[in-house]
Image (cartoon, rainbow over all chains, first blue to last red):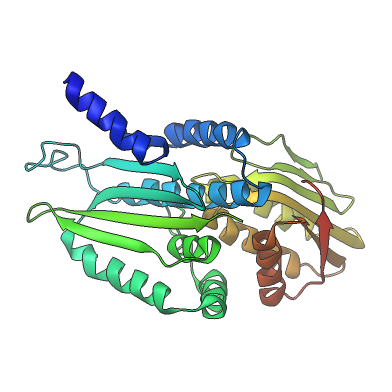
Amino acid sequence: MATKTFDLYNLMERGNVLLAFKGTVTSDLLSSVFQIMESKMEDLNDSPATKKKVFNVLVECLQNLYHHIDDFDNENPILETTRGDKKSAIFSISRHEDHYNIVTGNFIYPKNVDEITSKITHINSLDRDQLKAYYKEILGNGKLSEKGGGGLGLIDIAKKSRNKLGYSFKEIDKDYSFFTLIVKILKK
Amino acid sequence: MEDLKHEGSAKTPVVEFSSNGELFLKGRSIPENSIEFYKPLIEWLESYSESPNSTTVLSVQLEYFNTSSSKCILDVFKKLESISGSEITVKWHYEEDDEDMLEAGEDYEAIIDLPFEMIEVEEI
């Protein structure tokens, strides 16, 4: 255990991780995380514009996670394969020489893989002006879902981060896949 | 009618809607459930629209807002847009280096048929 903990420490240290979390994402947890990140970034030697952008994108990434984890019903809360809680998620924020990375990972139903893929592929195919127009279109026409997500989250993340969204899926078993989103924000 | 006041928190903005036509939204708007937060604002505007002041100025001074709030803020603008009998202006503030916030204001300006004033400030 001690070795594994040290390995994990080294992995995070080498990866310049500012904050990492694995577990259930609640509204209270997000409040704490936002608070911690704000005070951590305050001490860092990055421009106010960078800090602001990172915080903005972070809020969107983590709330995206929060809203989508809610999609699961309460049946079979335990994943058989990993024996973990399917509502559990992982995220990390790391700071590098010229950029920040925000990575999130959560379980999804395999039937949603295609939808997410086509959504991200579409977003990534757009240049900056097209992305702005797309955002405006969804903002003007779209309805807000009960949970508060309006389908704008990923578009906003791509628009603000000024980068293509990185993503991958891992098939866990017949019932679940694991979705990873990687967002890179260049420092200003 | 009574003024609407909300103190603001780590995730919600300060709200000061006064029947004299001065409306303020200031701080950050990043609640997970923004519909719940904005409902009283929409309802207040609904009552206000029955006998509005001759001029109405909504001053938006937001540091951050999430996409969930962006739809609700649009609803606030739409409600204002529907008010007749008042000269309505939106003052959209953004910090000098915050192009995302300026862009967000321009998006609303393009969707909503109200005069927007873009105001650059040093700090919100």
